[in-house]
Length: 411
Image (cartoon, rainbow, N blue to C red):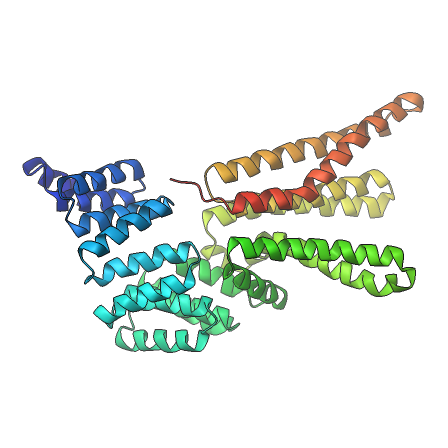
């Protein structure tokens, strides 16, 4: 409806910069990003000294993950008019997307100097304070905002995430529910309530604390943590190999690390799957999360059925089948961690290839089981390179997924 009104206005005054900027923001809400960008650029062209035109362009470019261009546009808007707190709020949001917490805090606080009760700047300031480890200050900020405006959905969602950071899922749930009552379309609150429900499980609560801690780190530091864990495990393996007397002490540490590493990949879809057994939980899962749990659950079920078949028959072929479907969970979980667009498509292609190799090897093993003599031996020999390739690919999927997760495709 807004688009229709704006186009009517442009038919009467086609060179009105403000209308073009508004139309660009409207189209961005409808995910028509290319046309939205064209409208905002048209607004800038018609009135290069109009700060709102640059603000609209920056907002659209931010939505499209074109961060350097978005920063240039919002800085130009602020150069032309540094008295609008909305402009500082957008600058803070862009800096947050780059994990520049200090710069984001500075932008939010400059906006609050202009308007002390600005909702956007208040919430963005609270987010950055949490990420900087200043959780008490963040709590005070949000409490003050809620006392002034208790019906703001975004502020309630922000309070919920703050409580999650403080490992208080019950209090977080209260605010997420209130945020969704006020605005059923609040995606940030919906994703928060999913995490809060899962965090009632002590295992996931520990994993969530790790995930939130990692989210505060830059991409470079995240890679340092991942590589540190990997090489630390390799060093432990080397120590155990060179000092057999220490092996009984080292082995539990290695098991703990490997279990933790596996959980970092599978915890999210696994606990989402468990959440589907909860009457309220399955209602708050997004369509994407539901699809992910369908795939993950199917693969997990096949692995468990294979384990059951092995226990009943003692045939090693079922144990290998269970291992194939079990290890396939790793690239499968990584697929849904990637951003929509080419990163997810690339990871989906990788997962599909791994599945094809693993299933082909399993089929050949079953064929060999029905053969005898030299033919069976030849068929089993053909399985060896496929099984080797599959397990190497499945273990390596974590590295592939980490690279793809760090990519933010332009829209």
